[in-house]
Image (tube, rainbow, N blue to C red; front, side, top):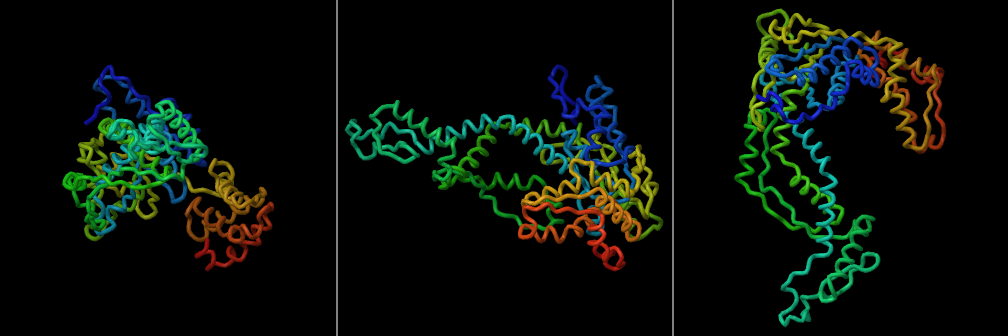
Length: 485
């Protein structure tokens, strides 16, 4: 179990260290409309991660995260809040559907796999950060290696048997104007060779040699492909692949590739050399343990209802399997033992049929913070279409602009789209903001299909009348509304 850095070790500030709860809510407001109670709860939980890391002494280990359960209908922002929160924090984040653990009867996925997934995400996150830090150095090394491939160094024994450099083997090639190869002799001096190398460097940086072919030694694995089913893969030991790699050593093969492809291959090799994977794994495990966030979606699907037999038995079994992970336990992964004591768990569910009280008491107790997300109405839909930075209207305008056209919505058009979405939610099934996707897709079907042949270079303007006329038949027809919207 990792308890944090040793005393005296410089602490690397987490990306969210400077964000107060108010600032976290403000950041979430940029993408999510309403649901202030949920935003406040996750903002406090996020800040508490940083506060705990700055508590000294043994008390730090005693401060456990307050796990959260978000209750609300589908499409109101539960998943988006958790996803944006993890992006803000720069923290390892995994989203798991609780129903996955019961998909194949009671066999399903191994519950501990969510911890292994979390550590895998943490390793990838830390490795990416380390690679970005040394990418410039790696690029410089790749450039030198490419120059060596384009202008191989002259071997000492290539001077010829008589020592005068007259043999055919003493002939090398340098570059002329435009990158053309010219014959030369090594006796013409090291200065000319140095000038040639610099000329090649300039051409390489200008991209003039991207199509030139060079020979590169590529390391390949001889590990045979394993064909296992999804359930079988879960039951395999996660170290099996590493064991097989030791049994099947890697081999080196020379490939003739373009300079562009060689740069990609060599950059990967240089990053592997510059990034210490032992340090990456050590930091990733610590980050997963102290900053990891697990989002358990559809937790209401494993809530056991009344009845001693039937599928509810397996649902309760999944809850009992999840309980030690949420309570805090040590899980074996391919990177070593990982403790879940300080992992933040955020659960979410619609709870249309079941209730949070249908969960086993022990699991309920591990989610002390409960927030309810309200259903979205017509006014919320108008704000969702206009205010977020990734608003649907902006997305469709960007897609149409890619075809050389301009898409405009008047205010009454946006209000009409929101009204229709809210009405269909009331009369068919409430799927929250996801209804806006279906309404806009149906509304813009003709425009998106006609581009670029029709409408390119024009301003395509939609007002309330156009929206009503395009959607009138569907909205008025119950069958069409049910299956299209």
